[in-house]
Image (cartoon, rainbow, N blue to C red; front, side, top):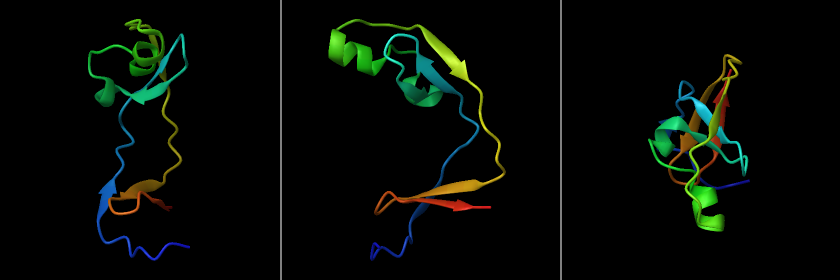
Length: 77
């Protein structure tokens, strides 16, 4: 159990599209990627790959927050 009181929370945006690289299968938010290449393929293989598939978002009705201090994910039904 952590001693963090979770005073600084950030809403985790559930509306961002998730993209998965068709080569290394890295899953990343579309906003994190921007218009760039797969960071994993670039770092490991030195190849700039831009071949992604879009993953459908699950809508389970929960709201998720991330604690800015300790990184814990907090779900509220």
